[in-house]
Length: 273
Image (cartoon, rainbow, N blue to C red; front, top):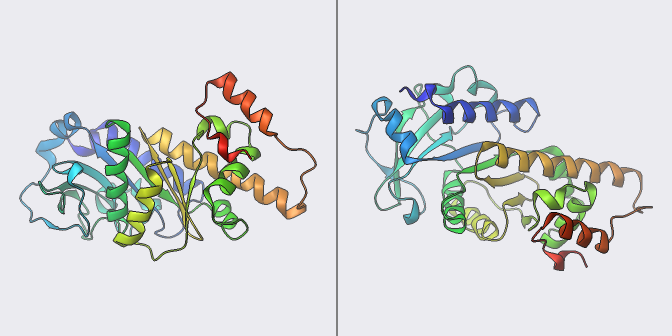
C-alpha cells in the first residue's frame, strides 16, 4: 500500500485542512504529529525509504525508540497539505536510542520536520506512558481567542480551567482534568518541550502564553475536537469580557458537582473554589 492510500494519511490530511479552514493556522503556523501503529507501518513499508542517515533530534525520547511518526514540515503551510501532502508532510523514524531520527517518506521538495519536533516527541513520550499507548496524536495550533485570553488572565492552570469550564457547559465533560498553562518561552527548543511535557503529565491541553495551544488525543478527532472546544470556550470568554467584567449569571460550584455526578466525571474539584 502507498502511504497516501492509508486511512491514517487521509485522516492526517483532513485534520490539517480542518484547522486551516477554521483559521487556526496563519501562514506556516502550527504543526501536527501522529504516532503510527506498527500494523499501519507494515502496510506501507514498501513505500518508505529506510536508507537515510539518522540525525540528532535535539532531545532524547527513549520510550519512542524505533517508532514512526507522520509530521508536518518546518515552514510548510497547512493550506497546502491537502493538494500536495508529499511536499508538506513527512514520516520519520526514531532510532534505537531515541536521540536521532531520519525522514523515510515525504518532503519531496526538501525540508525537515516541524521545528517543534522535540516538543512533539517529548509530549508523545509522556502521553504514551500515561495512557498505556492509547494517545497517538499531538496537535498544535494558533487559535485567536485562546491567545487573547493569555493577555487577560493570570497564567495559572486553575484560573484558566475555571473560566473555560464555565463558558460552555460541555467543557468539563470534554476536559474534566482541566488545562495547563505554559508561560511565554522561546519556541522550538528543548526547554519549552520539557516544560510542556510536564504539563502534559497532568493534562491533555497545554496553552502556550501569547502563542497557541497543544492538545493530545487518542485519534485525530479527539485531539482536534479538544482544541476546537477550548477555542470556542475562549471565544465566549472574550465576548463576555468585552462587554462587562461582571457576570450576572454563573455556573456555580454545586452546578459543576451535579454535572460531574451525572456524567461520572473525574473532575478536578480543587479548581472550583
